[in-house]
Amino acid sequence: MSPVITIKDVAREAGCGIATVSRVLNKSGAASAETRERVLDAATRLGFSFNELGRSLQSQRTRTIGCLVPSLVNPVFAEAVQDLQKEALGAGFQVLLACSNYDPALEADALRMLLAKRVDGIVLTLSSSAGNPALEHLRGQGLPLCMLYNSPVEGVPSAYVDNRRAAAQVAAEFARLGHRRVAFLALRFGASDRSHERYEGFRDGCLAAGLEAPELIEVDEAIRFEDVKLAQRLKGPGALTGVFASNDYLALSVIGALHDLGLSVPGDVSVVGFDGIDMGLAIRPRLATVVTDAREMGRSAAQTLIGMIDAQGAATDQPQNSQKSPQKTPSPELPGMAFSFRRAESLGPARGGGTDDGQAATSPPS
Image 1 (cartoon, rainbow, N blue to C red):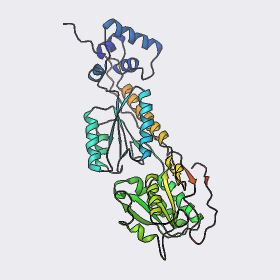
Image 2: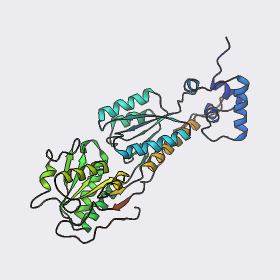
Image 3: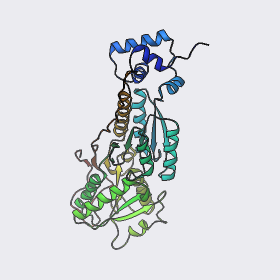
Image 4: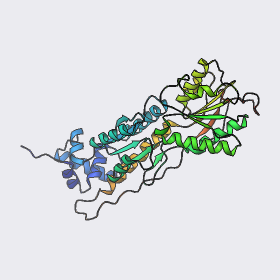
């Protein structure tokens, strides 16, 4: 029986490292024309077949990226994943997708599954990034990681928006229109550090603008106003005049529920969301919201992770007789991504007052 030719044999024959052979044969990274010719010539002479199974067994890399998000029901995650996958496929990587449903236990299980599949790196949105044991375990494995939407932690980059600063702008918009009593509405508040950051930024912005501290109202599932205390705060003396929902998907549910209660938006209650999903412009009244670019965040996360994977491969790409040990690749730092506030018809003057006409306009990017 003929001996099995491995990628190590090709690297030895071509006089270069295994990672270089992988990049050339995968067409996934930079290599000089001379190096590319040497690798292809060596592979041809040795009769090396670089199939998917061999790629996994011979190079110890699977050309696979893991992706963990809370849900695909919320369009903002679906849009991010769509462009993340497009970017990954263009670089020669497949994507394994998992959803945690905002459950830390499911989150940990999903990450264990992705590790078992031997992914080359993971893009992940966690319930909370600070002190997360699953994240600490992944960091201990030396696996390239990039977070999506979570604020970055030391050693792990993230494609994210400054939630506190964005939410403080929402408070300023409510104050501009004469609102004094507002609420922050969150879905599964305890399971999302993004909701915590948005509430904290909104609270600080309200206090800085002279408003009362916003009420915090948490719901676990779909809005059912007969079951939650928000319904009791929308009528009568001292009623709320504005609601800031932790995301657009939730804000759209609020607008529907207010309609069922016989309340008008924004005549009785103004509603603001966060994310800028397309559906917010398709409804009437159109949704005022913090606009972020989910697709760009997905692309940025994929590009960052693939860069880390390639850099890690290059660190181990030493000639066969080299005595140097591969160096740990430093994690890049990504700046917070741009956002803007979209003024639209769901945000108007408070009942009985206001200082602006509430017409739709787009604020400059922050």
